[in-house]
Image 1: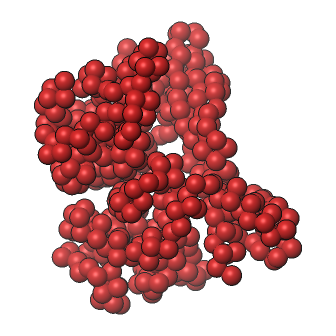
Image 2: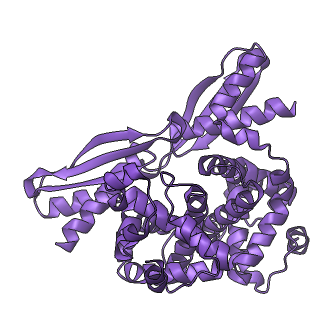
Image 3: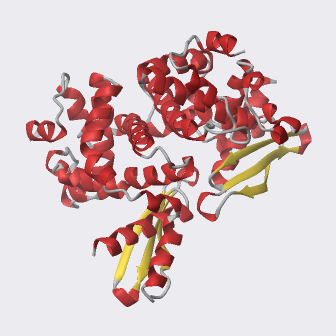
Length: 222
Length: 222
């Protein structure tokens, strides 16, 4: 299983125990992947920032930030993880297994970040940056830099207006976490075209922007 | 001026134009330092994450995140920048010069991040990670890992209770920025001991945590 994963990553671990830890969910056993995820998240941010900086020499800081946020959000990571069949290699506890944890976007995204952390510890920054570039190349090539100049909520509203559709409705679905580290989940819906997507963020506003971005992608894809 | 700065950084630029750009505020001329700041911010996050990961093998992900947030926040960066006399080397526009921009924490912090971005482009990740380690070593050595297990607002309230002092008062001082990228500034005050500090964040809650952290540091330092 992990041999195929290494092949898809175009990376072979010197210390396979790091990969094993990256694939180990907290519900399974210790050492699990949460500390590696902390490291991998920052490695991913830095590697993607570098790719965007180089590819879009004319974009401003805020535009680059917006593009990056879109590339590193949970949904994008979970899609890449699914492309790697990461779910098949995860080590989950009994309960998570039964409830289909190997398909859950948050578990997949966290494990992928942990893999980045593991590659970084195994071989350093330049190597993990190459692995990340390999996984993100197609997504970065598809970016239309004009998308960066508007925030997703504005872009979505303009797109719907151009199509003579009503404005989207945002609603708060859930808040999670401690008071000092809350996460918000919101939905963005356009009932007239049966569109409903969700977004997450550490602020309600951020979650709405993410949901709007997901809506934009759906609308453009179809 | 910049020779002394390079000496303090323990780094000499191969391409001095990168350092010049990092020190150029948007108000002065183009190319200015905003794109470098975008890059440097992510480099700093990753380098500090690595230092904390290695130094505190027993801390959990959330605890590491909290310690990092404290090390990379504007106030910490501005302090380091002040230690480097960065204000003397900044290239500011007329208006910013007159209003004392060379002392403003946000301008100093942004320029320091831009310097990290410039070193990264000049010599790669491993080199900038060494520069960051050099600048942060003393701060990281001073960390008491027990601080990481509580969020700053809780820790502050407990410390004040232990001293039989009233609970702190938080108030919103300002919000800045566009609707999609707002920044909040709050104060945290304990009038009984004439303590008042401020914090910034992309959420009001985050700004309060930062202010509480600053209050904790003041109380412990005195």
